[in-house]
Image (cartoon, rainbow, N blue to C red):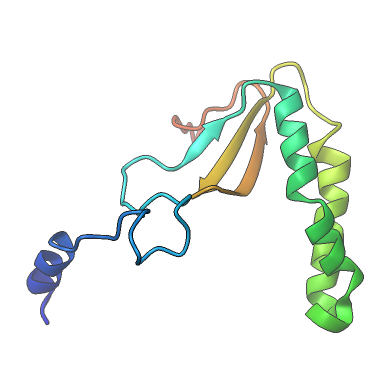
Length: 127
């Protein structure tokens, strides 16, 4: 199949709706390609801190505590992730900080805190 035929086939695909039998969960949204990333800005510091606690909570701690199940390397990374989340994700920021959540479906996969003066859309390489 050449590139043009592939592009035509891809453009004509109809992805399953979330309520169809092709979906494992009716709560998930159908997949789509969009021009903007699924980044949501938190409105306040408290919401970000709660998300940081949940994001690096029991699941990460379980991985950190069970190197026999996940490997020493993976458990050490999980332990470090939990430490960083505790030390920086919930305590250190300025009044100008902004907070973002990267979503894939209904799951938060990344949290970001930016200090004031930085832009998510404009980049100045001279700074």
